[in-house]
Length: 315
Ligand SMILES: Nc1ncnc2c1ncn2[C@@H]1O[C@H](COP(=O)(O)OP(=O)(O)OP(=O)(O)O)[C@@H](O)[C@H]1O
Ligand code: SF4
Ligand SMILES: [Mg+2]
Image (cartoon, rainbow, N blue to C red; front, side, top):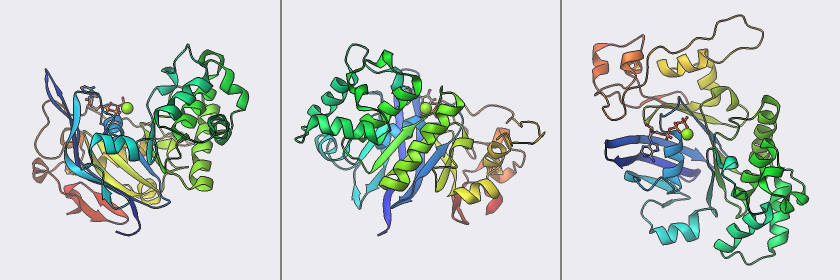
């Protein structure tokens, strides 16, 4: 469709390990329109990082896309060669702030040198120093940071820096994987504000990956709830928060602590299925309070207001 920026269609990305095949991303569908941002949320190990990495062809070497299409601005980027992908897409169209990247900065090089290296790798032919300063400014870091070493920066500064690095080649989509994890609440809020500004002022599309549904609201126009390698509900932010449909989404929403509320945090009983031994039918079956006989069959994606839900209750 004309207004669609990115469509991820039937994406499957698996890891091939000595223990077996890990179906980390197992039939994921979502689309984002121009100027829209999406939040992807779900419990640990549901496949969020693998989904982001698969889109950017940056999975661990044991992982790869086995099926599906990724349509970016009308072209299928699954079909192009690695060489073409590296030249045209990675960093330039889509960049990723990897989970934990702020702790993986090279301790022996200054910030400026690390940024310069990225630009040189991509044969940047403009004014390198100006580009570095501009990117630092975009994330509200002073240009003196370019001369510092990673250990001289606070956690919040390091997280801004890895975002600045992702912005160096002016991508239109930034995948931010757990960008606020391990930061204190105040710094978390600053990073979220920064991402929000990049979205609203610079028109950037953000794919925000998090296990914490409560931080998505500022940035996401729509939300995808991920469970055991699949998106079980993809709908507008408003609908997800006010009228969650999938029993898993309902459980996640009710687990968000409410300000000024004495309501007990509700936890979701049980565990996600073993990824090496996935059950047939609905993957939430063993934890679902509404499970029915038909749920032993794979639920289809059912169209509902502003998106879809993968649950037999709505058939
Ligand atoms: N390199 C790898 N080799 C094999 N399995 C992997 C690899 N990376 C991830 N996995 C497995 O794939 C599944 C999805 O992992 P992934 O890291 O994508 O989850 P996640 O939702 O990002 O979790 P978290 O919230 O903890 O970051 C998990 O079962 C994980 O153990
Ligand atoms: S398909 Fe059935 S088991 Fe799965 S979430 Fe819906 S009601 Fe629960
Ligand atoms: Mg992750």
